[in-house]
Length: 498
Image (cartoon, rainbow, N blue to C red; front, top):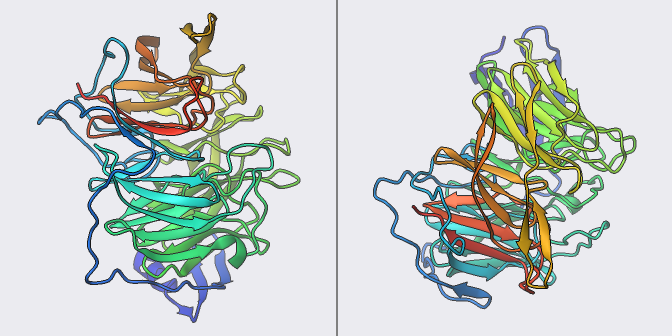
């Protein structure tokens, strides 16, 4: 077996704009060779030495309500560099958070009109970055997390109209890594910005540079930053399935050759068989529908194995991010009647199936792993969604629950409410649940069942599909559509400090 050092050296054999991979896999695997040419290495701009870090200012569309409670000196806090949080699994070590909501609901700190998108904010080094579309531009804004004031904004034109009538804004949240901000727009525009000043360091239009395959809903997976690379699930006519670009130069470092194209699930890194591996859950617009889980070498882009997992319906997609659930095991889930599967990566770096759960199909949300069980909201559409618990060892359903309640609408009629296809976030020893109509609850999830500790209605609006963000005891919620009170899409900061 080749050493890690040899494999690292093998990928460096590159010519002008050309990446040549020639390496060996683990014992029993075959030689892999791939040759992808970088069609348009971007021009790189350096941050001027005299560049001034801007001060945060009030901007149009920002409303400040009230300062939050002081943060406890004993509180544990964590950065939020990517949309699934610091560990890519919808968990954060934050503490000293509310376990009951105040009378009248959570208090707003600030809110802003956010334009169109399905993104969440990311927060690092006292900078919150949000990515949305306003009119005919995609806009990256850098804000003060506690006041909402803006440090800088970067914008560029975009032309996109969703063929199914959904939002025309970006789907992928920004990524922050080593003082750089990376965004992937709905039309495959990949941008690198300086976090401190907002300087555009480089930008690539992947849709025009490569022969891109078509998408149902635009380019929607979040890139991942790792070891100096920004990795993007792609999908081209010459089967460039996954591409890694150098974070500093923007040049193509390696490419993984496979027929599957990017889905709406985001890639993650997990330690499998003693090494970190890249996991990409692929599958979008194709006839017949194809897709599944790719296991890839992070240094070289070498494909270890591909496990097919995709509904047989043409209009289906893969949207739920894979979850590491134990030693060398990965959980996958897809809706449209497909369900879930637990996979084990063997010492030969091949996927083998452990169990299937046909009734546990998550559409786009990420399940929580707690106490040897997976908890998540399954369901393709609003009416057929419920919360369920599955035992990791056996794949058997432990329980399912579908709590409901009524919410006054101010029109004389109460609205029957459920979490529907909700999102789960684990923090401070409890689970916070965000329903897709704006309900926010505090849950206790155990193998024995569900206990609801408290619940509040943040607003009443459809498509509340993005995972909540918690940072330094503040809660950030993206409202993606107009609410029943006439408020346009907003990013809202609430005080969750205990």
